[in-house]
Image 1 (cartoon, helix red, strand yellow):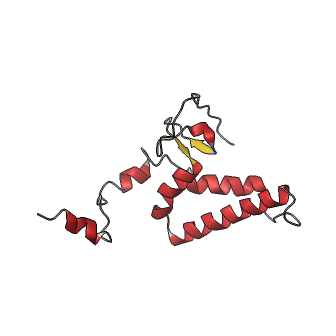
Image 2 (image 1 turned 180 degrees about the vertical axis):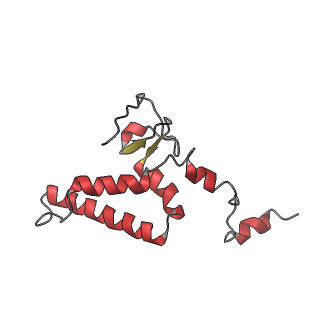
Image 3 (image 1 turned 90 degrees about the horizontal axis):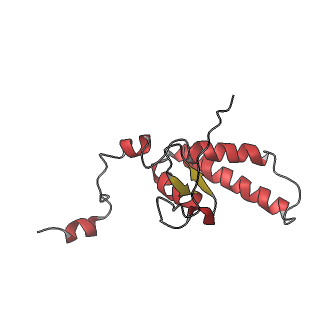
Length: 127
């Protein structure tokens, strides 16, 4: 049975990631009251996903685009998976837990601020 929750969003609520108004585009609101645009959340979450989950995410986003094209009359037929199911699976990947105060943040606490691939940045701080 689905759990019902209510989160009140203020009209001037900002995205916790980009700082822009959250109501300007599709967003997620977490029980902790953090709110993030879907695109901002995707950019934050994607680098932490396994290759399998990244593939699943991209497949689901493609299916959502197919649904949108079909609804606009730009594509013949309808996708095999219902849109509600696609959205539920996307939600499970993107918004399983708040990325700012949930397990993702805890798991990344030991990650260096500068990625080892950014050698030029690391060298620029040498004394």
